[in-house]
Image (cartoon, rainbow, N blue to C red; front, side):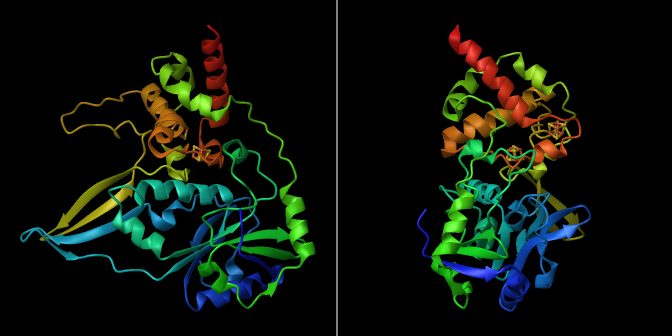
Amino acid sequence: MKTMKEKILAKENLAPFLDELLKTYRVVAPVRSGDYSLYRTLEHGRDICLDYLRPMKSAKEVFFPQNETLFYFNKRTNMVVESPECEKTTVLFGITPCDLAGIAAQDRIFASGTFKDSYYMRRRSLSILIGIACPIPGETCFCHIFGIDRFASEIADLFFIPLQGRYLVRVNTEQGGKLVEYLQEATEADVREAERLAAQPVESKVEIMPLEELSHLLAEEFESPVWDDIARKCIGCAACTFVCPTCHCFDITDEIRRDIGRRSRTWDGCMFPMFTLHASGHNPRTNATQRIRQRILHKFAYFKDNQGIISCTGCGRCVEVCPVNVDIREVLKYLSKILMEASKK
Ligand code: SF4
Ligand code: SF4
């Protein structure tokens, strides 16, 4: 992709760079939390933690919090009495390429089409995204099969590439450029070093059929017994949906105390048995087979049909958190084998 220019920031100057941002913006970045990191609001630049491959939870909660108040209302008058206030512009720093792809998928859900989500839109429009390259993929990562570039992103305003002792900072937007105006320009040698890193091949451990073909053929396997095999271990905890950067389902609830009510929305997940329970008492997805089939078909077939992209970024988080080792890479491999065999008949 074409960048406007490149700058250089010494690694030892990262914390002061973030402190400078904190004078004007809310800054969210990976922060250590026990044995992992999480995207959290920074108090000081020195709190940044880039020691882990990526934060344990995705960046989606910055724009789509796990629980949020939509408004307060008066039960007697049926009027809204208070709406959440506009927040400060947020600089989201240190977003991995898979999480940037996750934000791009969330944008398609909440910020495009006829019905846009005003809560998401407000936060997203007041944001500046700073991505960071991911030179060495982790054990569970498979972003390469989705064509995600680990050294660039179209939606990041700035993109940091770690080099020896310094970062090459790619400037993608004017908004991003203003944050790094005072940094020195990168040299040709810096740019070449970044290009050399980006050119290193990744060994693929996920052998699956071409994604276009997989998406196209999957829906034809709706009635296949293959889903029973895949779902056998699943205990319906929905941890996979909560850590996923692209999952976006939510529930709306009202809590009322005396005359004042609070309407809130909270993440929900298609892997919960009650997720599809209708008010009539009917539940169209009563077992794990139906639920896991929905999750896979939604990500790899329906989302592609409706939004033009597959809603998995290969971040590998669901592989790490599943308590019974359901591994989406194995699921895709297994489905590929079944689909290839079926297409030969
Ligand atoms: S399905 Fe799993 S690997 Fe794919 S984006 Fe979601 S958490 Fe990551
Ligand atoms: S994390 Fe594993 S066990 Fe839990 S719902 Fe997802 S696939 Fe099922």
